[in-house]
Image 1: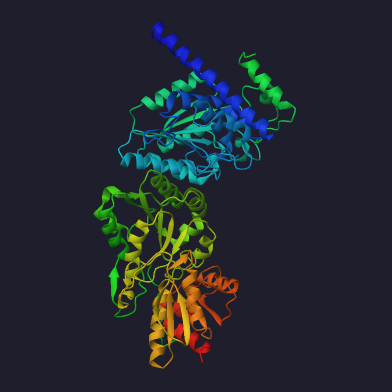
Image 2: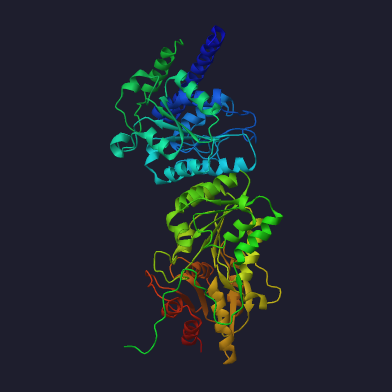
Length: 286
Length: 331
């Protein structure tokens, strides 16, 4: 690799690092407004969303329904706070909406729904739906001879749902090379650690066995993410692709990273300002 | 040993047609081919039941518009939703038991909540197979009636099915249709000018002695019963209510009020719980209409396996049994 390319790559990473910081910040501010929210997941997935929205996806922020866009499907409705943060950072949603997050008549309900929010492609929340919808959309895009792609962000908990695996098998059967699944492995679901509730490890082996081009990376390592996304998108394989991302809930806010992990990280009323301050410090912002 | 030969359990593709009754083979499949010729957005998708839902006719005509999704009904509904999102009009087929019992959440959240343009066409509604409870969708309407945004159609015969296909294409939104497949009786073309319309009940026969409000194949039974009773001087009206939801309340109320003394029978190929009968009972009560009211439908039980004619007699939905019920209540 030439020196110029290396510098350029470092530049790309630095830009994404700033985007991830802002996504984390928007999410924390929404949590502060509502006094609650799935901020643990949002902090954990922020780097993946930064790479998705500011490196991988084709989109027109002023026209979120643009036919030529890549479709990003959030099947994990409770991660909406994270996706809103990314959509705000991308300019699809106005930053002012943060103040209404989760309130009556807000366009940012706590669980993501297609009818409420620009850029929210599907109604999530009933887990195990997103990837199957993605299969249908990917088939539809091929019918239209479109070069757009489907991205579906799902969680390790969602792998418990049998419907997810119907979709996994189908995508490989139909050779949906325009479908990219992103699995957030934070090893937490409602009752306990994912590996304790229903162990799906070795996760990557299962996707490989089903016929997917499979990547597994540290989902909080921007360089590793960029490399995986670039490889997945550049590949000329006719397989669907999956990028399995190991993430840390609460990432970027040290006291939340260390807090007892569960599905819903508790943040007390007086801790939101502390969280924002710590996040700023981690990113060297005064 | 009984001298009477026992009837054998019906094959899965048992026809509900009577002897010498005119039928049409695979009306859904042929009607879909015709509609698809006019509308390139139509695609067909199935969960390993193409041949058993008459979708194979479409597959032969348009192989590149046919999607075999495997024996995975949840996926079928999700993928149908995805196709609709991309602007297509997917006709997705399976059996009624699997659509209602297995795929409910996927129809509800992935399709109905967003009013997506998916047409769910499911075979073996109610008691149309002798295979037993695994395949007898006796409560599918009860399951689906509570789902917002979903239109529910229970066609009577081949005529209804042919006309409903185009009506579904013209209608923007999710629909659940209870399909009769294979050799399907043709009975409605004797009624001049009959036209299926989503959301409309149609009076087929008039009579001042009793009113049958019916859907699906029970409209055929109602007509047969009315024909026979008329010969004996009892005049029975038949109101065919092929759309279960939204209910054509105006027509039903007007018809019931036309002869306030006339006993009302609601006949359906479905459990007496949660179907057309309860739907109409609740309508009449809300509107303060007091009439003699009876239901002709399947009991709240898991039904027996056996030959279809035997079972239709046993559970009171054969023409013979419908006549018996009417005679009990009509002076």
